[in-house]
Image 1 (cartoon, helix red, strand yellow):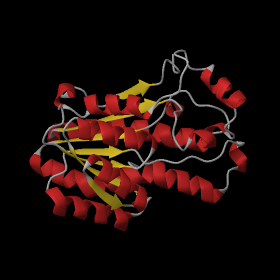
Image 2 (cartoon, one colour; image 1 turned 180 degrees about the horizontal axis):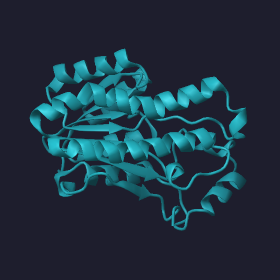
Image 3 (cartoon, helix red, strand yellow; image 1 turned 180 degrees about the vertical axis):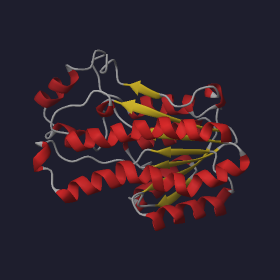
Image 4 (cartoon, one colour; image 1 turned 30 degrees about the vertical axis):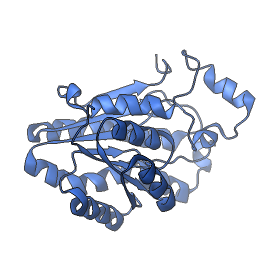
Length: 246
């Protein structure tokens, strides 16, 4: 029960890595709000863990502000904020990615971190406490070809994590990131271009431990970094990648 008495919001919490984080946080005693563009999925997950649900578009300022207001009405202070929602473009040459796809990737993967910080950091500063966790990617550390703008968005998130950590540390707010390798999530087929045994084998050959990240792996790492056990850890981007970045 490492998160007993804590309140937490997990964006993109209805599926994939987000769902793994939601389930682990609930098991560790946190009150969790599942925030997702998929409102029905958020409701289903919230019912599973006895939490709250909120439909949100993390790339839209008004929608994020509504999320913050819902959390304030539900429980007052938010202790933990997990920026997990993310998307990618399909694997292709960098010059072939459409402008619309580029804008969408940067809006969901980068702008959302700014919007969530703008909505939640002031209250965290007021009480001199809070934890923010950004779910980045090994793509921001060791990028793969043909995912150029996705890679760049995750590199941005890692840098944002570090600079947020430095600026917010005097206010008692810790900011860290997780860098998962490709995992068993709805985005896996998008990363690979096609989900075939051959493509899976190709991806797995680059991971020394020989398997994809699982939602539970991210949940376990997130629970540690967001708990008081990690009270001296801020500004790190922890690789949960089976050795992919070695």
